[in-house]
Image (cartoon, rainbow over all chains, first blue to last red; front, top):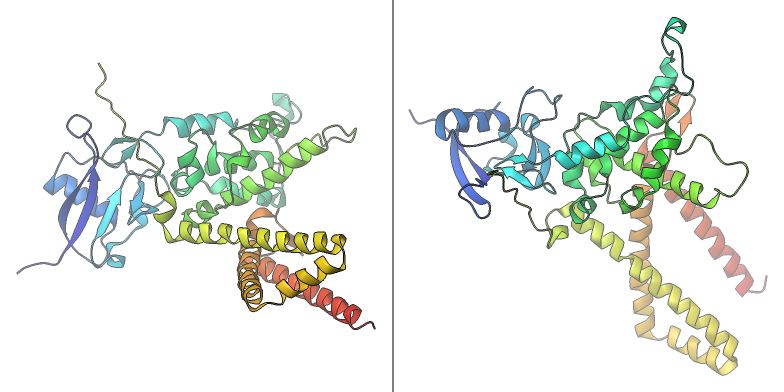
Length: 250
Length: 134
């Protein structure tokens, strides 16, 4: 009995032998519930053990398996091959250097995440005996959307400005920055402002808006970036006024 | 010695890679038509300042079939430019909360378009009545 199969084309790059990436086709047994990640694991386990890709949770929460699927940034675990009846082309996330096959070099992304100081910088220091910082559900609602980011980097692969200027801190890191700026317990907006206003800051964004379209967790990084453009412009024009906004880029 | 040799893909032709980018370039491109119309109006102001004969020449050129056709094309491009401008507007605004609910994106876009249409209609009406000397 011959079983149905589907073609998966992968952009291979093996630095020890390839001068540049090359396409390689694989034929994978097809079922209606076959995800791209399962197909890649089939290739690795049964057809070609040299294929490299990152993955972990299989349920769109770890953010490891981001890749370009027919040219669009997607999570492999959230992509089902029933939506690609004539086969699928897979390559490493755009706008990142390829380390090997579908694995990208993500050092710059990690550095950008660190640069936004993604932790609470308390407004008022509290002693241990004063207990925890309290927050109401309404206060949490203000930033919770931006806290949904899983660092999958799909928004970077969707942002042509990141591709054109790799120093731009980019949509994901700015969404994370906004998550902390909006937190009622945080007082670090002023400290983060220098980065927002800098050459690598928000004004690299030209409002393409694709970052928010591709986000698998419904975060709206384009909104975080554009709100901070307004805050940065206000900061520039009103900085001489005595009523300077001490809250910064809120 | 490290065997690492990260490969950087070129960005050449990036805007042709995805229909989303093509649409982005088209709607950004319509800004040139907005610029063209601004220059056309500026030319009118300069002609008006230069005297009656210049102004009449400007009016004659403006009324020619070619200019009417060009202006019609500009009008269509401005409609598209305006539409895409309001479409991206929700992404540029801080959240608008009305009675505990966040206003969703399509409502902001539609509200923007409605306000723009009303304001344009009002302006047209004022110009129409001014032109008729009412």
